[in-house]
Image 1: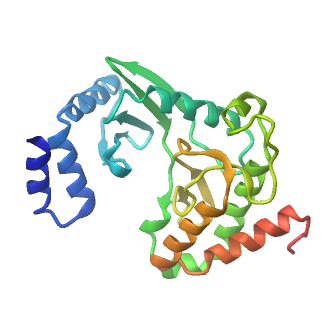
Image 2: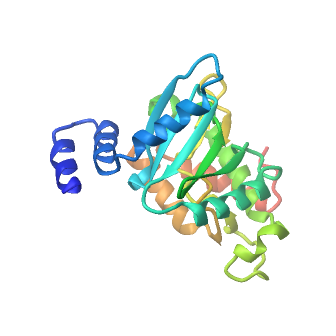
Length: 245
């Protein structure tokens, strides 16, 4: 019944982000308890500015506190398995990735596990005019390529058991990969430096090709045309030892 009501109500809302939020609040009333949890967390702070976001596929409810703390609450299960896996990956690559990864902490709460992250400041690619992005596309592409190259060639011993086969070795377009690079990074709007790469829960030791095809499709679809060409060019130069200068 809640699903039916949520579909009827949200169907009247044009803006997708608001539509998802209303649908989630109706289907999962527990989110109000999650907001109260964050308010209690902030009780000794000077301010308590809260922003809520619904994660992709309505799998998570995200509460941002004072643009300093990010709490991710699972909606479809207890969240423990994916949280523990992501924590291991984040810890393994935090000191390796050339682009900063938000620090992560796991907090048990009632019958779920909360993922608490360092706030990733900056702006998502999709929130910036494509015309502006295209003026800085080569600079952005170099940073994405460098992250792909460094992380992809790494083989941290502490997460080798997460590989399909622990003895697998990194190679060209093969290795550890964040998995969703088309816009899972934050940009400094003045320098267009990538400040953070976020959402490492789907990172795997894998071929890059399928994810790169998805990224290329989305970049082209939303007006950021040609970024994939620059990314692949820079990555190949790094991998095969060319200076690229």
